[in-house]
Length: 235
Image (cartoon, rainbow, N blue to C red; front, side, top):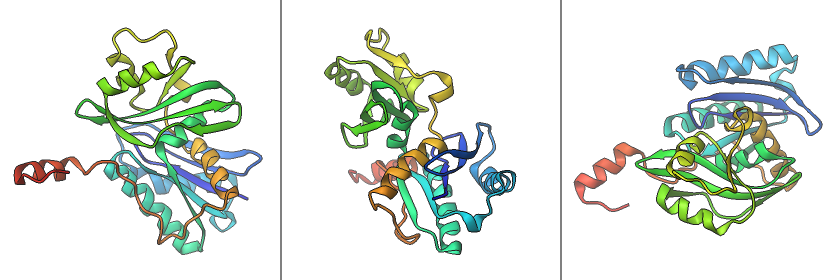
């Protein structure tokens, strides 16, 4: 099976064509251009350079959140459009869970992190052993203070991954000796890891129709939170 995987959950954007046997091709860009400018051209060029036409793709996978509200919406809309047009199944991947697949082949606890601002991060914990990924908690929005306390629960090696990893690591001030930052080449969420997570779901029979594919937010957008605050509405 050949799938198209995408990530637009943060500043960087990436697309990937993959089968279960190999990564066919990948484009990754981390610039100031918006995803609405880069995503579709990246997909078109990737298919062209890989000589894999859209009609040869058998499923579409996308990080559905948490992440940038605008970025996630753009990615999900693109995935739905491609899937609707070509009658393809969709795979909904947690952005945080996809990050755990960055560390395949390791033996560690992955602390997946995205900057949620306001001294918070989006976070989930996973145990990775070789090719096995085990979720240890639900996706959550957590304060940096509470994250620091939670890390005391783990005695094994803990690796920070994601666009919020450096912010969280710096907030520790004196990081525990078992806590590390992932290397720069695997620290960011990316479409290759989306593909790896998606194949597991496909093999488990967890696919969606394009109509069922939706963004997953852990918090309301900032503008809505500020409006709620003015109106005295609690989240």
